[in-house]
Length: 292
Image 1 (cartoon, rainbow, N blue to C red):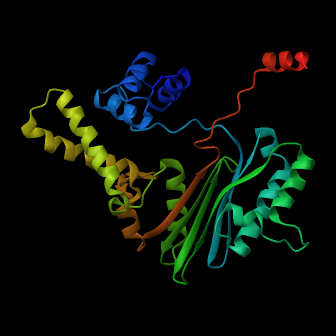
Image 2: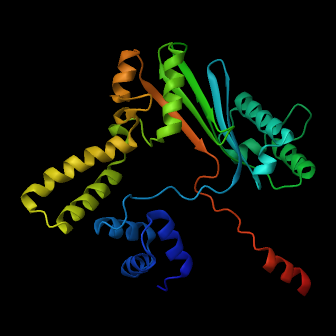
Image 3: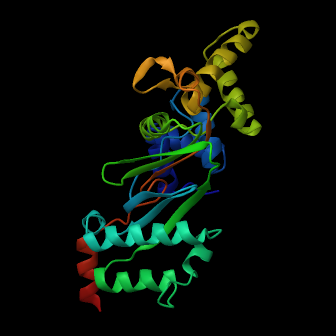
């Protein structure tokens, strides 16, 4: 398979490795980026399995709660300027209200929801596009429902750049919000180790094993090293194993126990994560216009 400059660029952005190392890894793995990441990690060239994809698309994330139902939503715009526009901010709040009330299964179903005036939510978004003058899109949302003896927590950071919704047992609103703030700051991927898929654990073990062998460690101590490093891996990705952001000497698990609470669910949205930003090249744009 031919290795393109775009593939090398993507691998470099995800791992921070050098261009030639990226190209070599891609060549060895026949262009498989995920396998190339593992190769670079095994050689100690890349520090993490995957650096967060470049945050690019603009827009807002928001949380809306009504009794035992809550929704977290991300709506995208093309520019940061529009994301700060009052019309756009109102639209995001309106969309969240519609989702909260109707609880659609997915984005496609959400866009077909009928509003009080007879139009659909998709048509309402199109109306806003006509007024604002930019492409706007409902990217994703999650609706959570809680029991009477549970509590929602929410935290919105940087005016909607990051939003978090948590669901915890008990009636401790402070704990629910504190955990939401922690999730915003530390970005865990799972609640605890039991939630981590086995194939992800197996893949990490293999990478860590190859790392240790490549460091010249004797095989009789490699397994102990792998287990130690795997614990570190869990501390990075599992909420309850992380150091609590307000008190790094305290694990989140201990903080929750002291509050008599456990986390049932959390959702964290960071605007534009995993999306590529449109690259503007005004010189090429002008040339294209001249050729018309």
